[in-house]
Image (tube, rainbow, N blue to C red; front, side, top):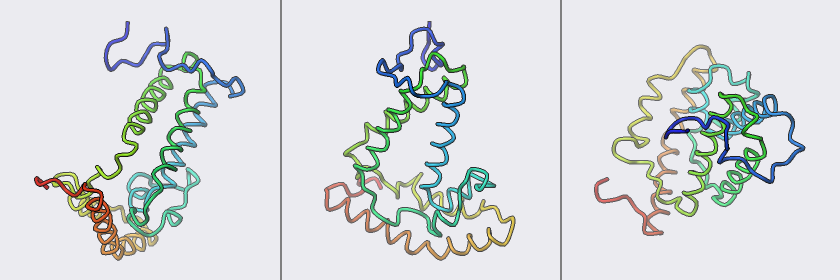
Length: 193
């Protein structure tokens, strides 16, 4: 019997999609390929600071940090519907894998991805609830720490660091633009902020 927080043990999977596409390759290799691809896709869409912070050798994952842009992210308004369509598509692909044929580690990965993607879908239509300047966990709190912990291993790292520092003003201008959009939709910062 499962207990809260346990990885389902493969008896009766609550995550199994009865309409599973049988053209999906065998579980272990195909599922690992899917996870590797998802990892690369997520990081390829991130900003240069995050990529640098998470990966020492992004090229090992087929990623080019300079393609991430020399900015801190949030530089353009994203199409929310496109994002959620992508989340639904990823969830559909995940559900195409036969959960019961995955090993224990893969089941844990499946379980976490399923939970995360479904949780993301719950936020659809509520984009203006995001608060980038929250008092304890806002950008103004973690950005100095990220710069202080920035790895400087070679010339490219120094160049990236300086380029990111130069983009801070534009980054905060983008945040102010986002806050103005929130205000237009009646979602400006709470009084406690």
